[in-house]
Structure formats: structure tokens, C-alpha cells
Image (cartoon, rainbow, N blue to C red):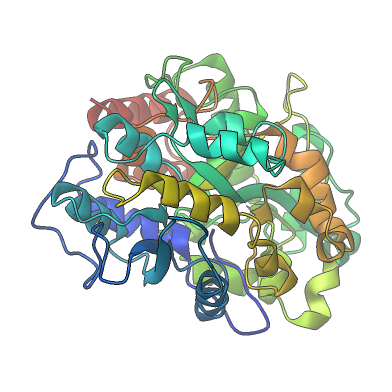
Length: 445
């Protein structure tokens, strides 16, 4: 989840908050700290009345999403010996401390949503229960209809770390009127992207929108998307940092060319997510990688002027992008594992309402939701699902699935400094990657 909008107002930016949360936690390995703040009034123990707790982050449209999710959970009627569920909204601010503190004191809830790589850290610590039996239950219920490759990304040596419920995907958006004004075409590869970006720069329009300030992770996501687009990435298949590769050097060369030709705004080094949204709204941006809900951040009259392009090819013909799978976890502190599984199996059958009500801007991960009219009537969502989702990967792109140390890297200081150096344009490509390599090795030890 990240910046987006709905008719009910501009939401909280989850990805913007990740950087501050992880930085305050030291952006180090996922250790437990019993002195970190907690969400009051929540516990993994079953309260009186035979219920268990569901922690849910503030996704999508913020308050509108939370109201919809709370209403959905209130309708849960457990069968047999299954326990009922109490809904608890959890803010993204200090999320890292909230979860690590709860894990240290064994006051985690029964089930929870959370940051993309959190369950991979927790399953290694024995804090979350494998979701294998839940997946079997979905198979039995014939509701295991996740989009291709999504569930596989949750697999670890200990079992499924979680199940997915939505997808934060980065796609290339273009602004039709500005490309027409510049006499430029929608790019199909990196060379034509440079050509289009150069034409946009000549009319004073940003060709590659970035926000690389200290309070947002936007630029980090775009750079990760481009590395993956060129068959590269920050990690080797075994999960160790592997930044200084020929493919990654090519990606840095491409970005440095964008800087040199004025395709990237030099002010991007200090941009917040609000600055970037403002540039899109004011018509100062012609192209950029962003979330699938970008159009909803624009005035209604301008929403049809932005369009998701088809994936572009890298120098060797590769196509790819970065995504973040939003998980649902089951904690070992649950008063009843069977009840946790029964609830989440039911909950996954209710979440379609988040899209029909327009309270989320992420993509669905279930085929049944992707086929809903509200999705199929939106050409940008259809292209995102059909063309971009199948080529998406996590920031651990070369590995067969996500892994624990990604939680310490996601939004961490090493990546933040790296993208700011890119925008500055004063460091050669290999040196940029060597600095990133050293930073990642430090936080993933």
C-alpha cells in the first residue's frame, strides 16, 4: 500500500512511513525490543467471551478502509468451536516497534496484516505459525485462486510465512496530453524512454518522476523496478547482497543518463511523496513508475489523461518490475490455531468489498476479485494485472522467494542514501553500487 486516494479523501502513505519506522529501529536485523511502544489494549490471549484479536494496518483510503474492514469483521459468525474475532486498527507510525515489542512480550494478536517482509522475519523466530494448513483449507474450499506466482512468494523452508491479500505493484504511467505536446511516443524500451524523456525535458516536463527525500521510499521502488527490468537486483539467489553486477551497472548508467539529460528533476533528491503527488496533479510530470492507484490522486477531470503503459524492455530484452505482497499472518500466541485459520479463510472471501467500495488502491491477488466489473472496466487495472503482475518480483528478485533480511532493507538508510546519490549525478555507476553493497552487508549480517 502507498499513496493513493479515494472519493473519501487522501489516505495515509504506508510506504512513506516505512523509512522512518525502520530508521528509528536502527534498520538492523530484526531483533526484539521489550521497551518499544505497543498498541494498547491488545493481546494474543483470548479475552473474556471467547474471542481472539485481529490487528489490521491502516491501508488504502485510511479511515474509510478501516471502517469497511471493521464492518466486515463484525459480521464474522464462527462455527463449531471456532472463536470469534475482535478488530483492532494499528497505525503505520512505529509499526516496527509495535510488532517487535509484542513479539518480545508474547502479546501478539492471533492474526494480523502487516508490512510485506515482516512474516519472513517472524517465521524464522517462531513468532508466526506456518500457513500450510490454511492453504490446504483454501484448497478444500476451492477458494485458492491467487494470481500466478503470488502464493509461491510466501513459501519458506519453514512453510508458508503468510497468505497474501493485496498487491502493491509498480507500473509505468504516462500523461497523454504532455507526450502529445512534446511530440513524443509512449516508450517501449529504454532507448525510446530516453528519447521521450528528452523531448519532455525540452518543454519543461519531468520525464522520470522520483521522490528521493528522507521521508519516502518512492525513488527506492523505482530504482528497484528498473534493476529488475534489466534482469538485475540487489541480492543473489541465496539471499546475500549482490549489487555490483554488469546488469546493475547498466541500470545505473541509464539513470545517470536520465539525470544528465534533465529527464529527472534535480529537486527530486529532497522530494517528499506529497511533492511528487503535487507535480503529477499540476501537470509537471510526463512519465514515472508509481502504484496502480496513481490516477485516483489526480482531480477527476484529469484522471483519464494518465495511462498505464505496457511493460518496457531493458537493454537485453528483459521485462520486470517490483512488487510488495501485503500479507495476513497467524501468530503462535493465538488461543486457537484452528480458529485463526477458519477466520482468515472466511476473511479472504470478504475482502472483495474493499475494491467494490473503492477503499483500496492496491491490486487484488485473487482471480475472483480481478474478474469483478469494477476491475475489468478499468483499463489501467486490467493492464496492470494482465501485463505487469506476471513479471513482478520482490526486492529479493533473484531469490526464489522472499526472505527475512529483506525486512531490514525495505526502506532502510542504505537504500535511501543510494537513490539520493543517483539523483545528484556526481558518482559513477560502479561506485554507487559498491556503496549500496557495503550498506546492505551491514544491515543483513
